[in-house]
Image (cartoon, rainbow over all chains, first blue to last red):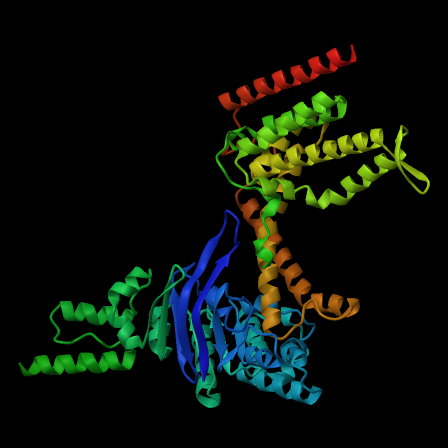
Length: 287
Length: 268
Protein backbone atom coordinates (compact mmCIF):
# COMPACT_ATOMS: atom_id res chain seq x y z
CA UNK A 1 0.00 0.00 0.00
CA UNK A 2 1.05 3.59 -0.18
CA UNK A 3 0.17 7.27 0.07
CA UNK A 4 -1.15 8.39 -3.27
CA UNK A 5 -1.85 11.92 -4.43
CA UNK A 6 -3.89 12.42 -7.58
CA UNK A 7 -3.94 15.82 -9.30
CA UNK A 8 -3.72 17.69 -6.02
CA UNK A 9 -3.81 21.49 -6.16
CA UNK A 10 -3.88 23.91 -3.26
CA UNK A 11 -4.11 27.70 -3.11
CA UNK A 12 -3.37 29.85 -0.07
CA UNK A 13 -5.54 32.88 0.71
CA UNK A 14 -7.98 32.28 -2.07
CA UNK A 15 -9.82 35.26 -3.54
CA UNK A 16 -7.59 37.88 -1.95
CA UNK A 17 -4.78 39.90 -3.51
CA UNK A 18 -2.38 37.62 -1.62
CA UNK A 19 -3.60 34.50 -3.44
CA UNK A 20 -0.78 32.05 -3.96
CA UNK A 21 -0.86 28.71 -5.77
CA UNK A 22 1.22 26.47 -3.50
CA UNK A 23 0.60 23.11 -5.16
CA UNK A 24 -0.13 22.76 -8.84
CA UNK A 25 -1.60 19.48 -10.06
CA UNK A 26 0.62 17.13 -8.09
CA UNK A 27 0.35 13.40 -8.78
CA UNK A 28 2.73 11.15 -6.86
CA UNK A 29 3.04 7.97 -4.84
CA UNK A 30 4.89 7.42 -1.57
CA UNK A 31 5.55 3.67 -1.59
CA UNK A 32 5.25 1.75 1.66
CA UNK A 33 8.40 0.48 3.34
CA UNK A 34 10.76 2.91 1.62
CA UNK A 35 12.49 6.13 2.50
CA UNK A 36 11.22 8.87 0.25
CA UNK A 37 12.93 12.24 0.23
CA UNK A 38 11.14 15.42 -0.79
CA UNK A 39 13.49 18.17 -1.87
CA UNK A 40 12.93 21.67 -3.11
CA UNK A 41 13.89 25.26 -2.61
CA UNK A 42 12.26 27.37 0.14
CA UNK A 43 8.68 28.06 -0.89
CA UNK A 44 8.53 25.17 -3.32
CA UNK A 45 5.52 23.69 -1.54
CA UNK A 46 7.17 20.88 0.46
CA UNK A 47 5.52 21.73 3.78
CA UNK A 48 2.16 22.34 2.11
CA UNK A 49 2.48 18.97 0.41
CA UNK A 50 3.04 16.93 3.57
CA UNK A 51 0.11 18.59 5.33
CA UNK A 52 -2.10 16.86 2.79
CA UNK A 53 -0.84 13.44 3.86
CA UNK A 54 -2.92 13.36 7.04
CA UNK A 55 -5.69 15.72 6.07
CA UNK A 56 -4.48 18.85 7.86
CA UNK A 57 -5.01 20.65 4.59
CA UNK A 58 -7.72 19.64 2.17
CA UNK A 59 -6.82 19.89 -1.49
CA UNK A 60 -8.78 22.41 -3.55
CA UNK A 61 -8.94 19.75 -6.22
CA UNK A 62 -7.68 16.19 -6.49
CA UNK A 63 -7.65 13.32 -3.99
CA UNK A 64 -5.32 11.93 -1.37
CA UNK A 65 -5.41 8.18 -0.75
CA UNK A 66 -3.72 6.53 2.24
CA UNK A 67 -3.65 2.76 1.80
CA UNK A 68 -6.33 3.16 -0.84
CA UNK A 69 -8.71 5.13 1.43
CA UNK A 70 -9.73 8.66 0.46
CA UNK A 71 -8.89 10.58 3.64
CA UNK A 72 -11.14 13.56 2.86
CA UNK A 73 -14.33 11.68 3.79
CA UNK A 74 -15.87 11.82 7.26
CA UNK A 75 -16.07 8.04 7.74
CA UNK A 76 -14.23 6.27 10.56
CA UNK A 77 -12.27 4.45 7.91
CA UNK A 78 -10.83 7.76 6.70
CA UNK A 79 -10.05 8.85 10.26
CA UNK A 80 -8.17 5.60 10.86
CA UNK A 81 -6.27 6.11 7.61
CA UNK A 82 -5.26 9.63 8.63
CA UNK A 83 -3.90 8.23 11.90
CA UNK A 84 -1.53 6.01 9.95
CA UNK A 85 0.44 9.13 9.08
CA UNK A 86 2.53 10.82 11.76
CA UNK A 87 4.02 14.22 10.95
CA UNK A 88 6.92 15.79 12.81
CA UNK A 89 6.95 19.45 11.81
CA UNK A 90 9.95 21.71 11.60
CA UNK A 91 11.19 22.56 15.07
CA UNK A 92 8.81 20.07 16.74
CA UNK A 93 10.11 21.14 20.17
CA UNK A 94 7.85 24.21 19.86
CA UNK A 95 4.81 22.01 20.42
CA UNK A 96 5.82 20.75 23.89
CA UNK A 97 3.30 21.83 26.52
CA UNK A 98 2.72 19.29 29.31
CA UNK A 99 4.13 19.46 32.79
CA UNK A 100 6.20 16.33 32.44
CA UNK A 101 7.96 14.74 29.52
CA UNK A 102 6.07 11.46 29.95
CA UNK A 103 2.71 13.26 29.82
CA UNK A 104 3.73 15.17 26.74
CA UNK A 105 4.83 12.05 24.91
CA UNK A 106 1.68 10.28 26.07
CA UNK A 107 -0.57 13.06 24.68
CA UNK A 108 -0.94 11.39 21.28
CA UNK A 109 -1.68 7.86 22.53
CA UNK A 110 -4.12 9.33 25.07
CA UNK A 111 -6.00 11.12 22.29
CA UNK A 112 -6.12 7.86 20.37
CA UNK A 113 -7.92 6.31 23.34
CA UNK A 114 -5.16 3.95 24.51
CA UNK A 115 -5.42 2.41 28.00
CA UNK A 116 -3.13 3.86 30.72
CA UNK A 117 -0.94 0.74 30.58
CA UNK A 118 -0.65 1.00 26.81
CA UNK A 119 0.17 4.71 27.07
CA UNK A 120 2.87 3.90 29.58
CA UNK A 121 4.28 1.19 27.36
CA UNK A 122 4.37 3.50 24.37
CA UNK A 123 5.98 6.33 26.31
CA UNK A 124 8.73 3.98 27.47
CA UNK A 125 9.18 2.63 23.96
CA UNK A 126 9.37 6.11 22.43
CA UNK A 127 11.73 7.49 25.07
CA UNK A 128 13.95 4.47 24.70
CA UNK A 129 14.01 5.02 20.97
CA UNK A 130 15.28 8.57 21.24
CA UNK A 131 17.67 7.66 24.11
CA UNK A 132 15.97 9.65 26.84
CA UNK A 133 16.37 7.66 30.03
CA UNK A 134 12.85 6.95 31.33
CA UNK A 135 13.74 6.90 35.02
CA UNK A 136 15.75 10.10 34.84
CA UNK A 137 13.51 12.19 32.57
CA UNK A 138 9.92 10.93 32.66
CA UNK A 139 8.82 13.24 35.47
CA UNK A 140 10.85 16.28 34.52
CA UNK A 141 9.47 19.33 32.77
CA UNK A 142 10.17 19.32 29.04
CA UNK A 143 11.23 22.95 29.35
CA UNK A 144 14.26 22.03 31.44
CA UNK A 145 15.81 20.04 28.60
CA UNK A 146 18.54 21.21 26.28
CA UNK A 147 17.68 22.06 22.68
CA UNK A 148 18.66 18.69 21.27
CA UNK A 149 16.88 16.80 24.06
CA UNK A 150 13.71 18.85 23.51
CA UNK A 151 13.82 17.91 19.85
CA UNK A 152 14.16 14.25 20.75
CA UNK A 153 11.34 14.43 23.31
CA UNK A 154 9.07 16.06 20.75
CA UNK A 155 9.88 13.44 18.15
CA UNK A 156 9.20 10.75 20.75
CA UNK A 157 5.73 12.29 21.00
CA UNK A 158 5.20 11.40 17.34
CA UNK A 159 6.81 7.96 17.59
CA UNK A 160 4.45 7.10 20.47
CA UNK A 161 1.64 7.22 17.90
CA UNK A 162 3.37 4.29 16.16
CA UNK A 163 2.63 5.70 12.72
CA UNK A 164 2.95 3.48 9.69
CA UNK A 165 4.10 6.49 7.70
CA UNK A 166 6.44 8.87 9.49
CA UNK A 167 6.78 12.26 7.83
CA UNK A 168 9.73 14.37 8.96
CA UNK A 169 9.98 18.03 7.98
CA UNK A 170 13.67 18.94 8.20
CA UNK A 171 14.11 16.92 11.40
CA UNK A 172 17.76 17.90 11.83
CA UNK A 173 17.45 21.67 11.21
CA UNK A 174 19.41 23.60 13.80
CA UNK A 175 21.15 20.60 15.34
CA UNK A 176 24.91 20.16 15.55
CA UNK A 177 26.53 17.53 13.27
CA UNK A 178 26.68 14.95 16.04
CA UNK A 179 23.04 15.42 16.99
CA UNK A 180 22.14 15.27 13.30
CA UNK A 181 23.87 11.95 12.75
CA UNK A 182 22.46 10.35 15.87
CA UNK A 183 18.90 11.46 15.06
CA UNK A 184 19.15 10.25 11.47
CA UNK A 185 20.53 6.88 12.57
CA UNK A 186 17.54 6.50 14.90
CA UNK A 187 15.11 7.05 12.03
CA UNK A 188 17.07 4.56 9.98
CA UNK A 189 16.81 2.01 12.78
CA UNK A 190 13.07 2.61 13.01
CA UNK A 191 12.83 2.05 9.29
CA UNK A 192 14.81 -1.21 9.43
CA UNK A 193 13.34 -2.66 12.63
CA UNK A 194 9.71 -1.64 12.38
CA UNK A 195 9.45 -1.27 8.63
CA UNK A 196 8.14 2.27 9.06
CA UNK A 197 7.80 4.18 5.83
CA UNK A 198 9.73 7.41 6.12
CA UNK A 199 9.13 10.63 4.23
CA UNK A 200 12.00 13.03 4.70
CA UNK A 201 11.89 16.66 3.75
CA UNK A 202 15.33 18.09 3.33
CA UNK A 203 17.30 20.41 1.20
CA UNK A 204 20.50 18.76 2.24
CA UNK A 205 21.26 16.67 -0.83
CA UNK A 206 24.00 14.78 1.01
CA UNK A 207 21.41 13.43 3.46
CA UNK A 208 19.12 12.51 0.62
CA UNK A 209 21.94 10.75 -1.25
CA UNK A 210 22.81 8.80 1.85
CA UNK A 211 19.37 7.68 3.00
CA UNK A 212 16.67 7.90 0.34
CA UNK A 213 15.24 5.16 -1.87
CA UNK A 214 13.18 7.68 -3.82
CA UNK A 215 13.57 11.36 -4.52
CA UNK A 216 10.75 13.80 -5.22
CA UNK A 217 11.76 17.25 -6.38
CA UNK A 218 9.37 20.18 -6.23
CA UNK A 219 9.75 23.63 -7.68
CA UNK A 220 7.25 26.47 -7.28
CA UNK A 221 4.45 24.06 -6.45
CA UNK A 222 5.07 21.80 -9.42
CA UNK A 223 6.41 18.25 -9.41
CA UNK A 224 9.68 18.35 -11.33
CA UNK A 225 10.86 14.80 -10.81
CA UNK A 226 10.06 11.59 -8.94
CA UNK A 227 12.76 8.99 -9.39
CA UNK A 228 15.46 6.90 -7.73
CA UNK A 229 18.46 8.85 -6.41
CA UNK A 230 20.65 7.48 -9.21
CA UNK A 231 18.26 8.77 -11.84
CA UNK A 232 17.66 12.03 -10.02
CA UNK A 233 21.32 12.87 -9.57
CA UNK A 234 21.98 12.10 -13.24
CA UNK A 235 19.70 15.02 -14.11
CA UNK A 236 21.82 17.97 -13.12
CA UNK A 237 19.66 20.27 -15.24
CA UNK A 238 16.57 19.51 -13.13
CA UNK A 239 18.44 19.70 -9.83
CA UNK A 240 19.78 23.15 -10.61
CA UNK A 241 16.45 24.29 -12.06
CA UNK A 242 14.92 23.51 -8.66
CA UNK A 243 17.58 25.66 -7.02
CA UNK A 244 19.28 22.67 -5.37
CA UNK A 245 22.82 21.46 -5.37
CA UNK A 246 24.30 18.08 -6.31
CA UNK A 247 25.53 15.90 -3.43
CA UNK A 248 29.07 16.85 -2.48
CA UNK A 249 30.43 13.38 -3.26
CA UNK A 250 29.04 13.51 -6.76
CA UNK A 251 30.54 16.96 -7.31
CA UNK A 252 33.96 15.70 -6.21
CA UNK A 253 33.75 12.76 -8.61
CA UNK A 254 32.76 15.07 -11.45
CA UNK A 255 35.84 17.18 -10.73
CA UNK A 256 38.06 14.10 -10.73
CA UNK A 257 36.56 13.07 -14.05
CA UNK A 258 37.11 16.52 -15.57
CA UNK A 259 40.70 16.39 -14.36
CA UNK A 260 41.39 13.16 -16.20
CA UNK A 261 40.51 10.26 -13.91
CA UNK A 262 38.79 7.59 -16.03
CA UNK A 263 35.51 7.25 -14.12
CA UNK A 264 31.83 7.71 -14.93
CA UNK A 265 31.09 9.78 -11.80
CA UNK A 266 27.74 8.09 -11.19
CA UNK A 267 28.15 7.29 -7.49
CA UNK A 268 26.51 9.46 -4.87
CA UNK A 269 27.21 7.57 -1.63
CA UNK A 270 30.51 7.42 0.17
CA UNK A 271 31.08 3.66 -0.29
CA UNK A 272 30.23 3.58 -3.98
CA UNK A 273 32.39 6.63 -4.59
CA UNK A 274 35.41 5.05 -2.92
CA UNK A 275 34.97 1.91 -5.00
CA UNK A 276 34.53 3.92 -8.17
CA UNK A 277 37.64 6.00 -7.54
CA UNK A 278 39.73 2.91 -6.67
CA UNK A 279 38.53 1.22 -9.82
CA UNK A 280 39.43 4.30 -11.83
CA UNK A 281 42.90 4.47 -10.34
CA UNK A 282 43.49 0.76 -10.94
CA UNK A 283 42.45 1.08 -14.55
CA UNK A 284 44.72 4.08 -15.03
CA UNK A 285 47.64 2.20 -13.47
CA UNK A 286 47.33 -0.53 -16.07
CA UNK A 287 47.42 1.79 -19.06
CA UNK B 1 -7.17 28.35 7.63
CA UNK B 2 -6.17 30.73 10.35
CA UNK B 3 -3.44 32.56 8.47
CA UNK B 4 -5.91 33.35 5.69
CA UNK B 5 -7.23 36.24 7.77
CA UNK B 6 -6.40 39.54 6.12
CA UNK B 7 -4.91 41.67 8.79
CA UNK B 8 -5.76 45.29 9.42
CA UNK B 9 -7.86 45.01 6.28
CA UNK B 10 -5.10 46.62 4.21
CA UNK B 11 -5.76 45.99 0.54
CA UNK B 12 -2.73 46.97 -1.56
CA UNK B 13 -3.31 49.10 -4.62
CA UNK B 14 -2.11 52.12 -6.51
CA UNK B 15 -5.14 54.39 -6.60
CA UNK B 16 -4.88 58.13 -5.83
CA UNK B 17 -6.27 57.34 -2.37
CA UNK B 18 -3.59 54.73 -1.75
CA UNK B 19 -0.92 57.24 -2.73
CA UNK B 20 -2.10 59.97 -0.39
CA UNK B 21 -0.17 60.77 2.75
CA UNK B 22 -1.67 58.89 5.69
CA UNK B 23 -1.69 61.96 7.92
CA UNK B 24 -3.71 63.93 5.38
CA UNK B 25 -6.12 61.02 5.09
CA UNK B 26 -6.64 60.86 8.84
CA UNK B 27 -7.21 64.61 9.16
CA UNK B 28 -9.65 64.69 6.23
CA UNK B 29 -11.45 61.65 7.63
CA UNK B 30 -11.81 63.45 10.94
CA UNK B 31 -13.43 66.47 9.30
CA UNK B 32 -15.68 64.26 7.18
CA UNK B 33 -16.95 62.55 10.35
CA UNK B 34 -17.59 65.93 11.97
CA UNK B 35 -19.46 66.98 8.83
CA UNK B 36 -21.64 63.86 8.92
CA UNK B 37 -22.72 64.75 12.44
CA UNK B 38 -23.03 68.48 11.86
CA UNK B 39 -25.04 68.84 8.65
CA UNK B 40 -28.55 67.55 8.85
CA UNK B 41 -30.57 68.32 5.79
CA UNK B 42 -31.50 65.84 3.13
CA UNK B 43 -29.67 67.45 0.21
CA UNK B 44 -26.46 67.46 2.26
CA UNK B 45 -26.90 63.78 3.02
CA UNK B 46 -27.18 63.15 -0.69
CA UNK B 47 -24.01 65.13 -1.33
CA UNK B 48 -22.07 63.32 1.43
CA UNK B 49 -23.26 59.94 0.20
CA UNK B 50 -22.23 60.92 -3.31
CA UNK B 51 -18.79 61.89 -1.97
CA UNK B 52 -18.39 58.54 -0.24
CA UNK B 53 -19.44 56.63 -3.37
CA UNK B 54 -16.93 58.56 -5.50
CA UNK B 55 -14.17 57.81 -2.94
CA UNK B 56 -14.94 54.10 -2.97
CA UNK B 57 -14.96 54.01 -6.76
CA UNK B 58 -11.70 55.98 -6.93
CA UNK B 59 -9.97 53.63 -4.50
CA UNK B 60 -10.38 50.74 -6.93
CA UNK B 61 -11.37 48.38 -4.12
CA UNK B 62 -13.93 45.65 -4.81
CA UNK B 63 -17.20 47.33 -3.84
CA UNK B 64 -18.63 44.29 -2.06
CA UNK B 65 -15.53 44.14 0.14
CA UNK B 66 -16.14 47.73 1.27
CA UNK B 67 -19.79 46.92 1.92
CA UNK B 68 -18.78 43.86 3.91
CA UNK B 69 -17.06 46.13 6.43
CA UNK B 70 -20.54 47.32 7.44
CA UNK B 71 -21.55 43.76 8.34
CA UNK B 72 -20.18 43.61 11.92
CA UNK B 73 -22.28 46.66 12.85
CA UNK B 74 -25.35 45.51 10.98
CA UNK B 75 -27.34 44.84 14.18
CA UNK B 76 -26.60 48.24 15.67
CA UNK B 77 -27.75 49.89 12.46
CA UNK B 78 -30.94 47.83 12.41
CA UNK B 79 -31.59 48.56 16.07
CA UNK B 80 -31.26 52.33 15.72
CA UNK B 81 -33.41 52.20 12.57
CA UNK B 82 -36.21 50.43 14.48
CA UNK B 83 -35.87 52.76 17.45
CA UNK B 84 -36.46 55.78 15.26
CA UNK B 85 -39.29 54.22 13.33
CA UNK B 86 -41.27 53.59 16.50
CA UNK B 87 -40.31 56.54 18.66
CA UNK B 88 -40.64 59.52 16.33
CA UNK B 89 -43.87 61.47 16.81
CA UNK B 90 -45.86 62.34 13.68
CA UNK B 91 -48.62 61.13 11.46
CA UNK B 92 -49.29 57.47 12.08
CA UNK B 93 -49.06 55.17 9.06
CA UNK B 94 -49.45 51.78 10.71
CA UNK B 95 -50.25 51.01 14.32
CA UNK B 96 -48.49 48.04 15.85
CA UNK B 97 -49.90 47.31 19.32
CA UNK B 98 -48.72 50.35 21.36
CA UNK B 99 -46.37 51.76 18.77
CA UNK B 100 -47.02 53.96 15.78
CA UNK B 101 -44.95 53.75 12.65
CA UNK B 102 -44.77 57.27 11.29
CA UNK B 103 -43.60 58.62 7.98
CA UNK B 104 -41.25 60.94 9.83
CA UNK B 105 -39.92 57.96 11.77
CA UNK B 106 -39.09 56.00 8.64
CA UNK B 107 -37.27 59.00 7.18
CA UNK B 108 -35.38 59.70 10.39
CA UNK B 109 -34.48 56.03 10.88
CA UNK B 110 -33.24 55.87 7.33
CA UNK B 111 -31.10 58.96 7.80
CA UNK B 112 -29.58 57.73 11.07
CA UNK B 113 -28.73 54.41 9.42
CA UNK B 114 -27.23 56.23 6.47
CA UNK B 115 -25.08 58.28 8.87
CA UNK B 116 -23.71 55.12 10.48
CA UNK B 117 -23.08 53.44 7.13
CA UNK B 118 -21.23 56.53 5.87
CA UNK B 119 -19.07 56.63 9.00
CA UNK B 120 -18.14 52.96 8.72
CA UNK B 121 -17.55 52.96 4.97
CA UNK B 122 -15.34 56.04 4.93
CA UNK B 123 -13.33 54.99 8.01
CA UNK B 124 -12.80 51.50 6.65
CA UNK B 125 -11.68 53.11 3.40
CA UNK B 126 -8.78 54.57 5.41
CA UNK B 127 -7.95 51.11 6.80
CA UNK B 128 -8.25 49.48 3.37
CA UNK B 129 -5.96 51.93 1.60
CA UNK B 130 -3.31 52.54 4.27
CA UNK B 131 -0.80 49.93 5.41
CA UNK B 132 -0.75 49.44 9.20
CA UNK B 133 2.82 50.73 9.34
CA UNK B 134 1.99 53.98 7.57
CA UNK B 135 -1.02 54.33 9.83
CA UNK B 136 0.98 54.15 13.05
CA UNK B 137 3.65 56.45 11.62
CA UNK B 138 0.95 58.95 10.80
CA UNK B 139 -0.58 58.65 14.26
CA UNK B 140 2.79 59.23 15.83
CA UNK B 141 3.36 62.28 13.70
CA UNK B 142 -0.10 63.67 14.48
CA UNK B 143 0.35 63.05 18.19
CA UNK B 144 3.86 64.49 18.33
CA UNK B 145 2.78 67.97 19.50
CA UNK B 146 1.62 66.23 22.69
CA UNK B 147 5.23 65.21 23.37
CA UNK B 148 5.76 68.66 24.87
CA UNK B 149 3.42 67.81 27.71
CA UNK B 150 5.18 64.46 28.27
CA UNK B 151 2.90 62.25 26.22
CA UNK B 152 4.96 59.23 24.96
CA UNK B 153 3.83 59.46 21.33
CA UNK B 154 6.80 57.63 19.86
CA UNK B 155 6.74 54.83 22.41
CA UNK B 156 3.03 54.34 21.90
CA UNK B 157 3.42 54.19 18.14
CA UNK B 158 6.35 51.79 18.48
CA UNK B 159 4.27 49.52 20.71
CA UNK B 160 1.46 49.53 18.20
CA UNK B 161 3.86 48.80 15.36
CA UNK B 162 5.41 45.89 17.22
CA UNK B 163 2.02 44.50 18.20
CA UNK B 164 0.83 44.66 14.62
CA UNK B 165 4.08 43.26 13.32
CA UNK B 166 3.64 40.18 15.47
CA UNK B 167 -0.02 39.45 14.83
CA UNK B 168 0.64 37.57 11.57
CA UNK B 169 3.65 35.83 13.12
CA UNK B 170 1.63 34.65 16.09
CA UNK B 171 -1.26 33.61 13.86
CA UNK B 172 1.15 31.56 11.81
CA UNK B 173 2.61 30.09 14.97
CA UNK B 174 -0.86 29.26 16.31
CA UNK B 175 -1.76 27.60 13.05
CA UNK B 176 1.42 25.55 13.17
CA UNK B 177 0.90 24.45 16.78
CA UNK B 178 -2.76 23.57 16.17
CA UNK B 179 -1.69 21.41 13.25
CA UNK B 180 1.08 19.77 15.24
CA UNK B 181 -1.35 18.89 18.05
CA UNK B 182 -4.00 17.77 15.58
CA UNK B 183 -1.40 15.45 14.10
CA UNK B 184 -1.16 13.95 17.57
CA UNK B 185 -4.89 13.34 17.57
CA UNK B 186 -5.98 16.34 19.63
CA UNK B 187 -9.58 17.38 18.97
CA UNK B 188 -9.48 21.14 19.24
CA UNK B 189 -12.94 22.67 19.24
CA UNK B 190 -14.82 19.46 20.10
CA UNK B 191 -16.93 18.68 23.15
CA UNK B 192 -18.60 20.91 25.72
CA UNK B 193 -17.29 24.20 27.04
CA UNK B 194 -14.98 22.71 29.67
CA UNK B 195 -13.56 20.15 27.26
CA UNK B 196 -12.97 22.81 24.67
CA UNK B 197 -11.24 25.06 27.19
CA UNK B 198 -9.03 22.16 28.16
CA UNK B 199 -8.42 21.42 24.50
CA UNK B 200 -6.99 24.90 24.05
CA UNK B 201 -4.24 24.24 26.58
CA UNK B 202 -1.96 22.28 24.22
CA UNK B 203 -2.10 25.30 21.90
CA UNK B 204 -1.93 28.15 24.40
CA UNK B 205 1.04 26.90 26.44
CA UNK B 206 3.42 26.59 23.46
CA UNK B 207 2.04 29.83 22.02
CA UNK B 208 2.79 31.79 25.19
CA UNK B 209 6.23 30.26 25.45
CA UNK B 210 7.05 31.22 21.90
CA UNK B 211 5.59 34.72 22.34
CA UNK B 212 7.81 35.32 25.35
CA UNK B 213 10.81 33.91 23.51
CA UNK B 214 10.15 36.21 20.57
CA UNK B 215 9.67 39.24 22.80
CA UNK B 216 12.93 38.45 24.51
CA UNK B 217 14.79 38.01 21.23
CA UNK B 218 13.33 41.24 19.86
CA UNK B 219 14.29 43.28 22.90
CA UNK B 220 17.85 41.94 22.74
CA UNK B 221 18.01 42.71 19.01
CA UNK B 222 16.74 46.28 19.55
CA UNK B 223 19.11 46.78 22.44
CA UNK B 224 22.02 45.51 20.34
CA UNK B 225 21.16 48.13 17.69
CA UNK B 226 21.25 50.83 20.37
CA UNK B 227 17.55 51.62 20.19
CA UNK B 228 16.62 54.16 22.83
CA UNK B 229 13.24 55.62 22.09
CA UNK B 230 11.98 58.68 20.31
CA UNK B 231 14.46 61.48 20.95
CA UNK B 232 16.23 62.64 17.77
CA UNK B 233 15.40 59.53 15.78
CA UNK B 234 15.21 59.86 12.03
CA UNK B 235 13.22 57.46 9.92
CA UNK B 236 13.87 55.50 6.77
CA UNK B 237 10.48 56.31 5.28
CA UNK B 238 9.92 60.06 5.61
CA UNK B 239 6.32 61.13 5.41
CA UNK B 240 5.92 63.79 2.76
CA UNK B 241 2.93 65.75 1.58
CA UNK B 242 2.77 65.57 -2.22
CA UNK B 243 0.82 67.39 -4.89
CA UNK B 244 -1.91 64.77 -4.70
CA UNK B 245 -2.48 65.61 -1.05
CA UNK B 246 -2.86 69.31 -1.80
CA UNK B 247 -5.34 68.47 -4.55
CA UNK B 248 -7.26 66.19 -2.17
CA UNK B 249 -7.30 68.84 0.53
CA UNK B 250 -8.46 71.45 -2.00
CA UNK B 251 -11.27 69.26 -3.29
CA UNK B 252 -12.26 68.49 0.29
CA UNK B 253 -12.43 72.20 1.23
CA UNK B 254 -14.70 72.86 -1.77
CA UNK B 255 -16.79 69.87 -0.67
CA UNK B 256 -17.18 71.28 2.84
CA UNK B 257 -17.92 74.75 1.43
CA UNK B 258 -20.77 73.33 -0.64
CA UNK B 259 -22.14 71.55 2.43
CA UNK B 260 -22.01 74.76 4.47
CA UNK B 261 -23.63 76.76 1.67
CA UNK B 262 -26.46 74.26 1.28
CA UNK B 263 -26.99 74.15 5.02
CA UNK B 264 -27.13 77.95 5.34
CA UNK B 265 -29.39 78.48 2.31
CA UNK B 266 -31.73 75.72 3.40
CA UNK B 267 -32.29 76.96 6.90
CA UNK B 268 -32.44 80.64 5.82
